Image (cartoon, rainbow, N blue to C red):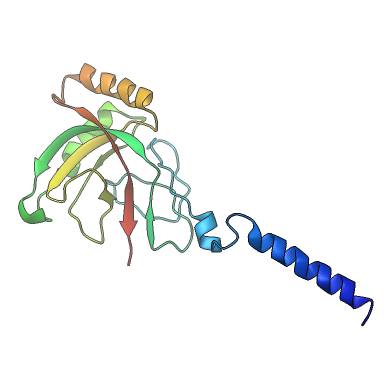
Length: 171
């Protein structure tokens, strides 16, 4: 027992030191909580466990996530429309989204739907408004470059840059 005592007390001291380190009281989930990165190029595969609809902006989701959102990103809003009382039957058509996608083959064009558990949410968008937007990167410089390309098409008067997140609530 005498030989074990110094080892036992040294172990207790080490545990005490580790408990005093910053962040020691955080749970494992708090320390590892991250936000998903956007899969902004529709030509490249998106390695994620998520399943996305064609109108969604896909992002990387870790295994077993229930509520998850993305890092901040920029989008250029091409069009918006009101949907009174957040009516889920009102949205920008897939045909219109695909036409816009043809103009920006390396940047995902996405369209919001109603605030429903089956749909992604987009921050900075009113629940009673639908948007058609093109992913414009993670920096303002990237977004300005994409806005320039949008303006060159002449198809989307009033297009504007917006900083946002997307995510889902699978509860």
